[in-house]
Image 1 (cartoon, rainbow, N blue to C red):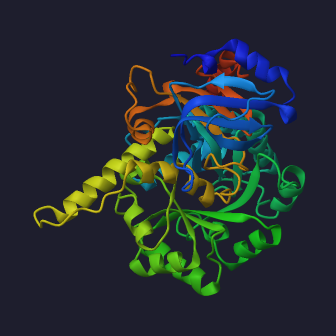
Image 2: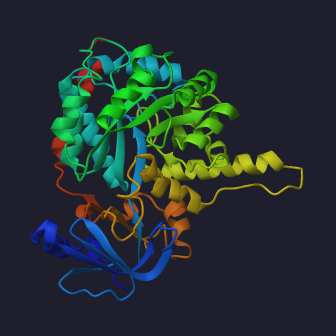
Image 3: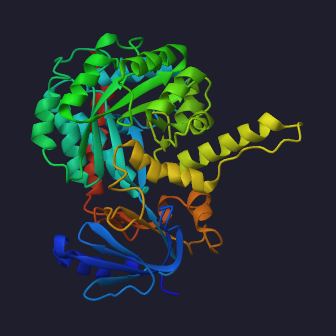
Length: 463
């Protein structure tokens, strides 16, 4: 059995020798988990990439002049889609692993560390987060960039995404606390013109906001004024800190004002009222769950709101949130949600004789891929291995020690695999990880930059 083609330096060299726009790659003999409802799982299948696009999936595809990659013994899946991460915080990873509550996080990070960040710190944190995302199979990352103190801070965050080659969504918001230029949201016009002039590019732009004025005042709270800005720019909106009674009331106001839609994502959505959920379902509003954040930090009910979302017809995306206290990878989010929901379902009917309503491993992989893409406004671009979509895909070794033998491919991806099993990552048809290593990264230099930035942030008094 040959499982070495995605660890072969010679194959990578041949791929990179060919011009990207004319490159053809044929993966053969893989178990292909397409996450396309019409295609399902294809055993011993082939997948053809031409340029940046998946052009065929099936059996016995014509190799023609393609670079043939023997993927026997592997699982091909869509890349994971992260719907919400505060990437600039990455050099502060796990600095507060046992944070007690949201207030503790807010005061330490947003009212403290954030206030001293320079543009170069924004760049380093965001780049580190994006490279780590690629390493763990996340090919699309929404960066909820809520520390845009100056236009240079925004530029640094965007350029970090560009430099990594990730499919990035820059969701821009002004900071909660401290001194800043008050250039947001006015600067979004410049940002769009400078960085997002084309619809056919790796990066997309969204407006970021908060659900209410409780944390940082009315300027950052989503409402008719910010909705108008987003509409004029033709961009989506991601709304964070959607928790509890006050956010429920805000959701109902937004529904009444006609500013909820599929272009709006509500993040967390824990502890919301049935009335708020009804309004979200009726308007097609999308939801980004943060399973470990809700549970570990203890946001409102502390229970990821997957059942509430599904009950109104919303299939949510998944997200990482804050690396200062949480894991960085999508495998953890899928497993946490899978375990919590199934525990909750069984507990709800314990002793009654009723059958619990449990989600499946297919559900959580769907949330982490296709539904994440839908949540980020990219369902037509990524999230499934569908011909015509961009080639954002993972090659996962199914015969590694922790995965063999392959009995159920979706179960193996969700419950068995981790970053070490991902031998290759393609984003937009370009190899970004190969032979288990993220490409084109000087790790020693990056480590030096990260440590220098961290020391500056930790040793500079809050502004």
